[in-house]
Image (cartoon, rainbow, N blue to C red; front, side, top):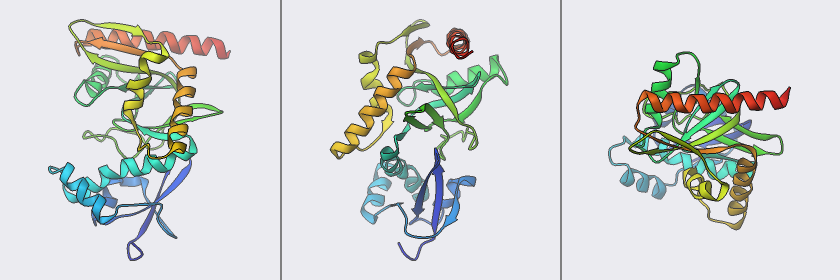
Length: 248
């Protein structure tokens, strides 16, 4: 990799250095990349990249490399109490909110409903893969370069986490609060981590414990229409008001 340029991206204040095999990969990071010196922290081996291309046959080579760097980046960030998380994340009332679920469940639909019904009320942090930071100072949500097909995100916007909403398609609109044990596996499933060592398991366990102690986790069973978005908005507004009252 010595012949390739080295680039740097900051995640939650932690710099990560990259070297790319595909010439077009750097452009997919958009404005987040800066040139750097030294050896890269993250790079694809030829074997890893070929595997990524097989798993993502519809992606161009640079797209496959860009997407596969998510796991390697999250693995590196885990030692800093951070990981990449599969969710739509947006800021409202000074707090970050995560809408998470497997792909195709309606995360982007909910956010687009929000923009149509309540314009200028919420600001997107990341449309697909934000960074969650869980430390002694609290739980924060930061942007990342991976913002989904729509490219929705703000590279300068971070906020303290207000709550997490797990989406589920159903035959009615219903919102319910989950107990920690009910949401532990759904949240772990959406953490983009390769748990290959005891230290990595310990780091993610500490992160999830801090998250579950800090914020509510809810399940929104929904039809995907505007009524479900209004139901969710009302609850998030209530939580934000309660947090604000406690901080006064």
